[in-house]
Structure formats: C-alpha cells, structure tokens
Length: 329
Image: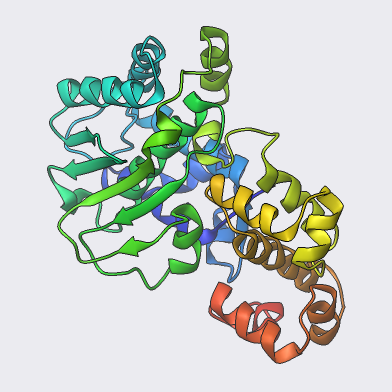
C-alpha cells in the first residue's frame, strides 16, 4: 500500500481550517490520530488520505475543500465524468470535463490545450486561498489520474510547470506525485500528457464509473490506473526483497533489463523511483518496529554502505535513521 508523508495530511486540512472547521474532528473521522501529524517521519497510507479528503468534502459540502471563494457542490466531479464518458476518445473526454468546470465556476479556469503534448492548465482566481498550493497540485494530479482511469492504463506525464519556486519542505514527495521533468517560477501551473496515449477510445463503462465514485477519491490518488500494470508488479517484487537489483527484477518478470526500463517509461514510471519508494517505506517500518541496527537495515535494503543509506534517509525525512528512531529528538 502506498504511503503519504505527514506534510500532506497537515496541509490537506488548511482550507477547512480557514473556514473554522474543527480539523482534529476531521482527522479522527478519517481514522487518523491528530498526534501523528506531529510525529517526525510519520506516514499514512493512501486510503487514510482518501478518507480525510472525503470527510472534508462531506463536512464542508464543498468538493473544492474550502480552497476557493465559492463552494463546488458535491456531485460536480461525478457529473463531469458522466459527460466525459460520452466522448470519442480520452483527449476529448478531458476537454469536455474541463469545459464543464469552466462553466460551473470562475474560481478555477481549467484548459485542455491540444498538440503533440496535451497540456492541462489550471489558473486559480485567488491563489491566496491556497498558500501551500496543496489544492492546485491536487487539482492537476486529479486530471492526470482521470486521464489514466479513462484510458484504463497509466498515461505518461511528460512535464509539469509551476508559477512558484521549487518546494523545499516536501520535494521528495512532490517528485513522485509529478514523475516528470519540472519547471518552476514559470508563468503557469500545468501538466503535459502524451497525446498518443490520450488518442484512444474510452475504456470505461457507466458501471465502472459507479464503482469508481463509490471508492472516490481513492482512485484519483493512485498510479498506475490498472492493477495489471508492470510498475505494480515491480513494486511487489521489490517489496518482497528491496535489495533485488534491476537485472534480478527483469529476470523475475521474464524480460530483459532494457525492456523493463522501456515499459516502465511507457507507464510514466522508473525503476529507481519505485525502488526509492519501497526502500523509504521499508526503512521506516524496520526502524520503528524492529530493534535492528541501522547497519542491518541498510544491508537488508540493498545499500552497500550504511552512510549511503543514512544519506538517502535524510533526503526522505530530513533526519538521520538514529534521529528518526529516537522520535526526531
């Protein structure tokens, strides 16, 4: 199960906090202990985040979670998806859904610009209502996930552009949410998707939509869109043995190393990124739940030297493994 850094659980509730909502009550309603957000290195699973987003939307009666001047009534996303399902291909579906939102609200302008790379641009009327940019990033990610869901497979994200500096507090997490080259301090907030991957018929039915909405927003938070994707199989292999190298992964899958890398790129993923995610989560579990030495944990995760593991762990969490084990002291 994918996990999410405590940073996102904290900023996720900022819109509700601005509106005077009891944030601790929201967290508890989602099955999250508010004290976890003050615990260095804590991560929650993606299902907990989905429950939290759902709790915020239900409490506020607002799909935009308090990050815009006007609320977006629950059911808007479902209606946008219904409109999208009638389109001839995925690119046209995204265009229809974006047009609906442009007509439904002036708080967010969402444009789908065609070309060899399909660009999705989001402009917020009052960015000051989202000072951490949580919702604007979530909004862009949602459009990518929607494209993946409609296509029935992972659509490669080719580029992402932002009109603010590179984030420092959460960049390690950010780069997994936007698995592509980034450009900061630019003039817009946008993502670019592979046009060929969007020029396919929609592979979802009304029954699929009903099932997705019943799980919402979980499906809009996960990659790959298909449970049969190669990236998921690679993740499972590495979760069982984080020290397994690329050649061993390819051999276990019955393909060559070059084919493995090429097919992962086609899913918008990279072996190195999957490995880092698996190692990070495994390291935190082992340091929290076992008495293994840092050296033993490093070796189990496939690091040749403990100092390499310590350097990577500091990048993930901002602290050394020993500091993490002491609770950030």
